[in-house]
Image (cartoon, rainbow, N blue to C red; front, side):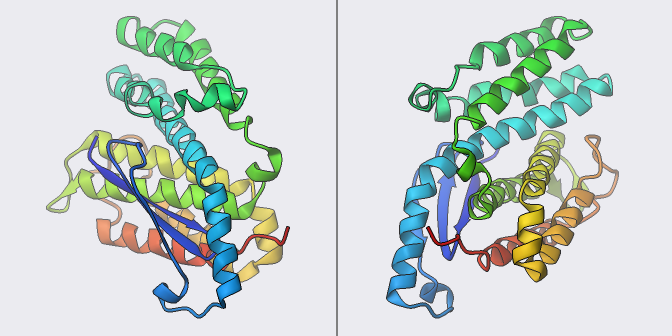
Length: 271
């Protein structure tokens, strides 16, 4: 996996976090709305930054789990296509690159350790790629991640501000992977392309959880978010890369930035 960066937009505060592989948050630098050229009162800025700081551990946690889900989604597509050799890295990456980022948090959040389940699935795909039990193990692995996600309070998981922060982090990762996959107008890194698809698929799935609420409260923003997410998903139409990229890395970057900027117009509800 190439080095990537997550861009988190929480309310009116933007947080840039550098990452290595598919996770490992290293630094976080909040930017005020004034720094981005938009006016805000001191109280508004303070409230936004406070919200961003309070949410950050949950956003980090959920983003890591979301990246795991993205890997497994594309792995399942590849398994269904009879390509276990291509599916295997996408099952291995959650274990090798991401699990350490949530491992110590699971007991603190009263969530069950699901690494053994991921490892069992990985072992089956490597040693017995045609075993019927892979289907069962895959479901168990996804359930393990879902249970870890459900350790977050429902009020957090249903918050548009929170979900959009996670989506933006995931899409920044997808953008980096897509850029790494393409050279000279051709897709040269299949795994990175597949990573992109998996992350966009799950980001789109996450948005569906808040789509009705965003549409009701912010109809213009909702239209922009939905159309941009759909365009991103169309850029990676299947787990098998197209002969010619559907979109350039610059076009994917523009769509990602549109979603991130639109997200800034959706502010947290007053507590």
